[in-house]
Each structure stands twice: as C-alpha cells, then as structure tokens.
Amino acid sequence: MGPVEVDRRRLLASAGLGAALLGGMAATPALAAPAQRFPYRTLPLWPGAAPGAENVTVTQRSVLRSANSAPDDLAWYGITRPTLTLVQPARPNGTALLMIPGGGYERIAASPDGGGIAHHLAGMGFHVGMLLYRLPYDGWAAGPDAPLQDAQRALRILRAETGAGRTGTIGFSAGGHLAGALATRHGDRTYPAIDAIDEGSARPDFAALMFAVVTMTDPHAHGPSRKNLIGAEPSADLIRRHSIEQDLPDDLPPMFLSAAVDDRVVPVENTLILHAALKAKGVNAPCHIFDVGGHGFGSVDDPGGPGHFWPLLLADWLGRQA
Image (cartoon, rainbow, N blue to C red; front, side, top):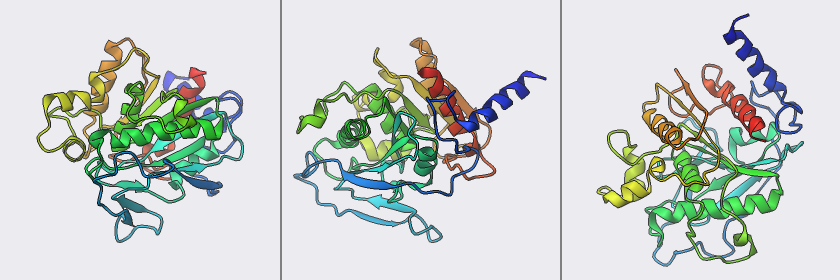
C-alpha cells in the first residue's frame, strides 16, 4: 500500500469524527452536506448604534445574489446593524467558529440562517457564529477598521455565549482577510469598551483562511477588495497595515490555509505569500492548495470540487492542535 493510499484512508476515516478528533464530535459524515438544519438565533453585535455612526447615511438592504439564487442566497449592502447568527450543534465538540463570509468588502454574501457551510460545520459539532459585518466605505469613523471592530466584538460575544473550550475563526475570500486581520491585530483596541463582554480577549485560538484576500500589494492584490477597504490610491502605510503577511505578531494564533490554483478572482499567490511569511517566522502552518476549485470552493455539497475534503482537513488539523 503506497503512501497516497495510506493518507487517503486516514482522511476518509476522519469522516467519522469521533473521539479521535476534537473530543467526541458528532458522527455526521463530512463528505456530504447534511440535510439537517440546526437551531439558530441572531444577536446584535452592539447594544445601540455601532461605533462611529455619526456620518453614516446608508440604508441596510439585501438582494438575491443572482436571478437564479435560492431565496436565502443573499447579498447584503449598507450594513448598519451588524449581527452574529449562532448555529447550535446537536452534539457540541467544544470548539466554536466565528465564520466570516466574503464579498470583496463591497457586500456580504450570507444567508439569514448562517448558510449551508455553517450548518454543515454544526453537523460536525462546531458552535458556529456567522458574522454580518459593516463595510468600510459606508462612512464609518473607523474607515477600514470598521469590519475589524465588528470581528473583535463578535469573537468576544461568541466566546461568552458558547463557553467553548476553543474559539477560533474561519474566513472566506475577503472574509478570510478579515479573519487574518483578527488573528494578526487582535491586540489592537479598535473601539472603546462598552460592557463586560469587551473585557474578554479578541485573540482567536486559531484562524482558518480559505481562498483568502491577503495582500494589498501589487501585483497579487485583489483590486476590488483593496479599493473598497483602503481606497483607490492608498498610501504605502495603509497598504502595509492592511497586508496580512507584513505584520505577524509573536502571539499569532495557529493558522490553516487553503486555496485553489485555478482561482481567477483572488490569485492563489495571496495564500502562498502568507504561507511563506509564516514559514519565515518559524510557524508551521498547513497550506492545502488544490488543483481545481476556483474561487469559492467552500461549498460542501459540490461533487466536483474540494468542498468534500477541506472540512476533514480542518478537523484533522484542529484535532492535532489540542
């Protein structure tokens, strides 16, 4: 039996997701999206208006992502009421995930109930909190740090609400950039404390970045994300500050990276640049680069893409972090 076959058997065996992974996960096979939907509730992030709303005039709205979209496949614009949608697993495994969807910092692609990926992860035993965050160009006083304010607040709420032993983050596309900012800038006090929740740490215990926007530097920056986050002609300081790979703290949480070579939206070099920076810092981060999958291969019910496997790879890695 060759090494490839051994590795494949190990990967498929982890679909059972029992005591060997993450302390007794639910036994839902991760090779197919579960039909079951789990209980969920949506919480406001802020007890009143979000910080820095004085000059904000946008109106929050949601529309179908395309003419053929399902009724819950929405794109959100002008977010003024950021929220955290908590999906409750039937058999918690002790780990909570702050899930951050993407949209190029122009919109947020998200379903009201958290979406299929959130419920799939809940089927694996994870507490999942899906973040609907503010967009940086809508007039918020914090500008490009407005999404990070929401992510820091959301992580604190998720940790307090679930009481999970570990609370990390997983982000997709531009949401991966925000997850990376949360991991690398968790020590920044981006807003004044408003209640006891803010006494908690904003450092995630781990961060998973999926086909993520990483760098703001040419030639591999994702142009729309950069423009929406830091403007059409950003200064060198803004570019450096918002390039995840350029300022990795010593207390960086463990990171998990994945992307596809054939991604035509966010160049795979974003993930490779971050992996190289982590390696230079002495951090051994897994980096799963698939040959196919394009942009957005996160869908766990796509029979032709790596969506079948990344949840298993993530679960296996998390099991080895315990």
